[in-house]
Amino acid sequence: MLGMDGFDDELLGQLLEWSPTVIVTETMAEKLNAAEVKIDWLLTDDNNGDIQSDVKRLPLNYHTEIEAALAFLIESDYSAVNIVTDEFILENYLPFTDNINLVIFNNNRKIYPVRSGFSKWKPAGENIAFLTTPIDLKVTGLTHQHENEYVTKDNGLFTVQFSQHFLFIAENI
Image (cartoon, rainbow, N blue to C red; front, side, top):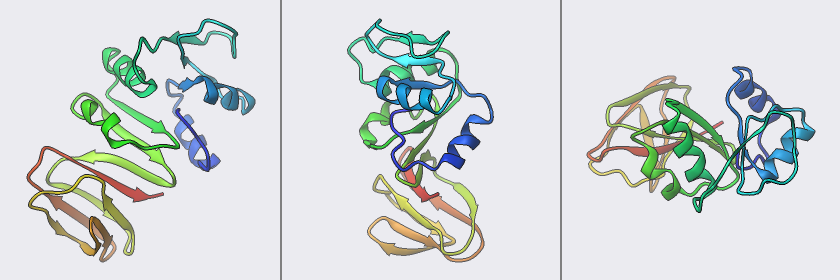
């Protein structure tokens, strides 16, 4: 976890139900410890202090926190990751899209990369935003609103097709 400002406690509880590996920054470690959430890994180059027993340290080694965490998960053969963050910088995630399934929770949005032909069931009136500019975009079940923003027409599947390798999309949670 990189940040949880405004993140819904109920959704956090749902993510933690499956006893995931919890990797956090030093700032988040203090908040999660206060909330009695078990931490597995702490992203730090510092060896001072113990937040909880049995917390392992994951050194940054001159990488950003997200780079260090994702590289560790990929090397450890994790197939998917949920990331909770206050700040979403698309470029930080681009190098990892082929190696791990990413779901990023940011400011009441769920963000993830999709490949052409992606379909998902959503209720009518749900917002879908493309965070990368689609090339040769074809959609079904969506109505165009603004530049890269759409809304679902009806209850049911929407489908997106495009030319590039993948797109990042965001939906409201």
